[in-house]
Image (cartoon, rainbow, N blue to C red):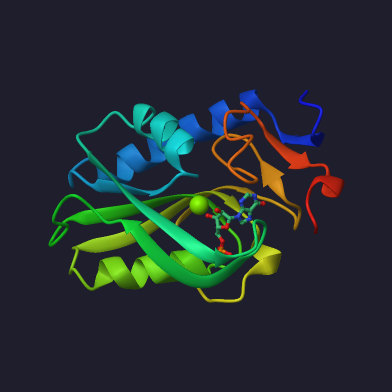
Amino acid sequence: MHQDIDRILITQEQLQEKVSEMGKQLAAEYHRHTPIFVGALNGSAIFMADLTRACPIPLALDFMAVSSYGSATRSSGVVRILKDLDRNIEDRHVLIVEDIVDTGLTLSYLIDHLSARHPASIKVCALLDKHERRTTDVRLDYVGFPIPDEFVVGYGLDYNDLYRNLPYIGVLKPHLYAG
Ligand code: IMP
Ligand code: MG
């Protein structure tokens, strides 16, 4: 285990099993629709790569990059778009793929932003749900794991851009960040 990790919350095997289950479920739901999976960079990149490979149906992939103002561990909900979608989503079935939903502010902004382009549907697939911290009412259609209110890294999730490449989800040692 990495020296900055307090404990492993979700192992590599648990991630693999869950992501493959989610991929199958999405395939069953979307096989007639050629959906567009929209990932929020950078956090969702690794989840997206595994999820799409576990979902054996025709689908398109796109990414948005958003940055939310705030500290490194808490988002403020004020979101800035660094990279918008490359394709038109009008009348398409959109699945937003998120690494983690915390307050829900980032997701709520993304849903509003994408809804304005009149997709046929928008649903949300989140690997992690830190539900205790939710301050806004957003519906998650597919959730990998509900998790407690602790700061986690790995499998795409970062602290100051580090730890994204850990193959598991771990709790960061609290003394490494201000709290
Ligand atoms: P929200 O807008 O509060 O839902 O924040 C969502 C974003 O905050 C996520 O996309 C992550 O980038 C970041 N975030 C929230 N909690 C964590 C965590 O425990 N570890 C790493 N990033 C987190
Ligand atoms: Mg993110």
